[in-house]
Length: 461
Image (cartoon, rainbow, N blue to C red; front, top):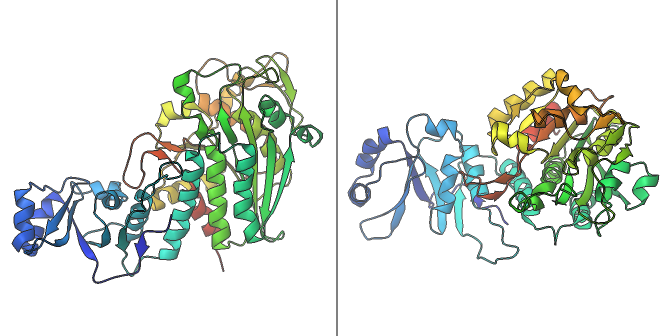
């Protein structure tokens, strides 16, 4: 969809932002029909409350939008963006106390997104004329990336298999001069990606490892790895139907990694970007891998399958081992990896793991600055015994049922040895309930914070 933001426009209808404490003074200042109408309709400036107000002739004069109690808007800088789904068609502008005008405008753009691939709907004609201080190009960069991630995550698996996910990667990299290589089906074995092959071998749709690069080879190396399980039945450890309903989103890590790559390419950051995506479907069939099977990995470690529903860490293991072979300056993986992460922190706050203190501090600071929530969790070494196996180097399912997200991160850490700046993000890629700037459904997580870190370390010329 097109960006619903415009340059400053004095003729745009005002969205009067106000708190309950400041409402009386604001209505007194506006006076006339607006104040009378607002008081008659009981407008209280509660957080997210919106009221379109008329002038003396009955025409739309603007809108009142509540910021809630003092400090509420500061805690939720996306709050003003909620107006995008509440206002009628027209060109609008914010007027009043905005903590961060750029975040408010971005939220307006993100709030406007709708998934229309299967259910046609007219494009919303509600637009926002932004303040002159707002960088439209920067907002457009972020919004386009979020739109891409959401579009991919929302697309069901019948239309987004491993081949289609690979094509989406090509559509970002190749027009920008990037290179994309695919290793498909049984070629994964000869190319030494045995775990990717094992997870994907049960599907009629061939598994693949997609390896895309962009930028000058002499530039600092930034490598992104994204979990690309296009649908996860759980395999022989099959999921209950309630847990399977959202499994089209199990490629959310790949979608978000690709969206981040799109931001980096669009900003032309001076890095050698690499995106690695193991794209598979975890199916149940006579060819599917089984509990108790043992497979080698690219790194040489053998893995006993304790649970076929812990497949994401298997495909990521081979992908991370490949990435680690060149010891990039920064290695990040994103994956919809564990339900345990949701139990610990809920759907809106993805945990991330790293032993690089500088990277951890940068991510935390960027997360706060751009309102892209993440929370650091520990790579607690004492829990490595959870991954022990009596017949192999590792078991893919942590024993005991505790600390599932940490155990998964520790499993991945076994496959990153040469790279010091590595971070793992256990994202959800879905909004179970609407929030300002975040409609219910497919969601991008952590990528705006990560882009802020990368663009600060290696800024565009």
